[in-house]
Image (cartoon, rainbow, N blue to C red):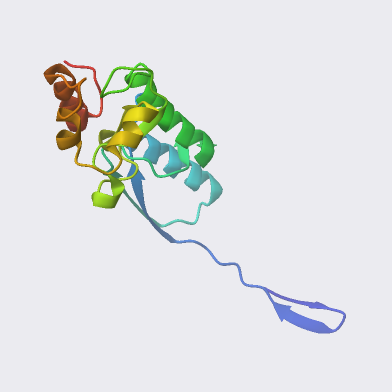
Length: 172
């Protein structure tokens, strides 16, 4: 489009987004499947622009990981709220009890310490912990430390192992 204003001419070009390739890193939600999330996102994107000719999406599961912002339905949930919900889910799953000693717990412990290569934000590597156990364990190897504690029990060790495999305490 060419236009002139006060004797000056200028050209305006309208640019279109014709190709979109999006890869979603998702974690399964109880109330929403990753594919459902991507379909909602795609429909919202199509509402915003009708010019997309080629549209590809890939959904990559994270196995219970936490990234930051999340989208529930068509609503963006801020990172702070999402992180709080993620932490709360783990504490609630353990009934706010330390996975190691059973006392009230209000912190999360990295089963495999981050300094030893443990993942920072994956459900299977985090569990509810009391401040005493969290400080005492520090970055020690979990089983070496846990088995040396007076409160160690095979039942608790089995529960922690189940958590590490499934990211939940709900057994089928």
